[in-house]
Figure (cartoon, rainbow, N blue to C red):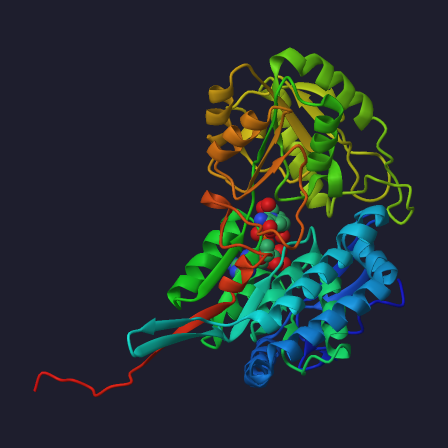
Length: 484
Ligand code: NDP
């Protein structure tokens, strides 16, 4: 294990805390199946300590100026960048994702969020509304204690994407990572303290879903932000509703990518590869339904297969590797189950489809052709390296088919026709769309889903709305009139 490994399971009130009374959770390196660490699920005492620390620290943090808060976040961003390699190795051990990816897409993306929201902190405020001689002003206030709950595919990025806007607005946070990838958020907590964050403002507790559920139910919590699946989202949203708490829900997807016959085919294939095989396909916004115009379908498929065969599958710590294992055997088995279903329902397997015989949870990047809208692989979120190509002839028809899903996270269009691109995107029901690229999520741009894919937005100025609320103050300058 690297020397960057966290020294205990939880991080509360500015320090690492251990409580071995909790259920042990092994941290498994997906490339070998070896246990590289053990964390202990939070006991009720740990959960209470984290919430108590957060509640106690929040007022002091909120009382600091935005400039002061922003400085802490920006220092944390600098520390993350200085230690990017160590943090990336840790992220690779935690998730199995190739170091080639984690070096550029995980801790650095977290640093971008801390830098961006740190920069916004000093600009946050309300407005002044003149009403004759009277006037109203609004004050942008933090919500209080926020809970963040993460998925396992981007553990450090998810922790930063939630912590950065929450802390910028003057909130405190208790973050619960996925039990499969508990390490990155602990390093973030450690770095924030080093950057000058007051103890208790950002805390991390480990555990399964029940720990997340206990956090949400606690009366001290004002908001929950979840990144996870739709079924978990339903439970978390319902639990938050019981306390009328604020929510951000970043949930799953089954996003369409539409490739018109005038598109640059190599670029469209690059988009399809990025949008299906990066992180071994374990990305919520992936364009897993690739609608290809029938006129270019054969060429698209043959080049897609040819290029996908060149994936370098191997040791994720070798920087030449660009396709790593799945996060767990359970996830791999689930994906293989979908592949079997795709074959039994009549899709044409063009490439892959098998587990790879070696240590760890590897499977082949998989391409299906002749997929139809009613097949399970075209309807359910697979969350693995399975790309489905569907044919189309007509623009209106493909828009209707693209929208015929309960999800609405993302969508992409490849075409060189400017008017077609905007016309189509305008009609797609998705929170995040791309034209002639796929899966780019810069921190400046709001990110999130519509329909079952979520509520609220992360990143961009939009995230501020989800971690603060306005207090309205009416100021009278004349006498107070009354009826009697
Ligand atoms: P899960 O929904 O299984 O879990 C998400 C988190 O919620 C985990 O930390 C989990 O804990 C926790 N959890 C589970 N049950 C509860 C509960 N009742 N109350 C509170 N917390 C609970 O998702 P995965 O981790 O399997 O991640 C994959 C999913 O995440 C996919 O559907 C994917 O699309 C989605 N996702 C969405 C993204 C987006 O931004 N829209 C980005 C990345 C992923 P534990 O697992 O430790 O038990």
